[in-house]
Structure formats: structure tokens, C-alpha cells
Length: 93
Image (tube, rainbow, N blue to C red; front, side, top):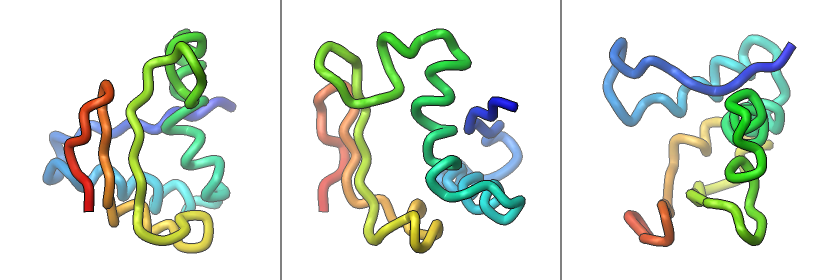
């Protein structure tokens, strides 16, 4: 079964959607697969793999960096330190 990350943030405060990574792993999904559900899997399910979903030359890329290793501690996904969208840095610590 293909699973893509995506919440309806209308049911909680915006900025908390990273918790979906926690919920997925609590349900038994390996952390790396939860992260892929927000990147390569989502792009695939949307039919946009040639344009987004991974960092490659010629693709659109929004890049984030978190504090810590999310594979070891999925809570790191809530510790956003760097955000770049369309080549513009919105957050850098």
C-alpha cells in the first residue's frame, strides 16, 4: 500500500503537522519510510516524480534541516532549523 504524508491542519494548530511522522512511527512505520512518505512517495502518488520528491538537478526543491537525527529520534522532525523554498531561505539558525 502506498502512503503519502499529508494532514488536514484544520484540526490542530498549524506548525504541528510534523506530528504525523510520530503517529506513523507509533503505528509501526519505520522512520525512514515516514520521511519518504512526505517526499518521494507523495510525489509518486501525485504523478509528479519527474518534477519533485527528491533533490536532483532540474527538479524543484524545498529543503529543510532539523536538529538531530530523525531516524534515531523522530521527534527531531519538530526541531526545524533550516527552511528553503524555491531557493529562498525562510529560516536559518
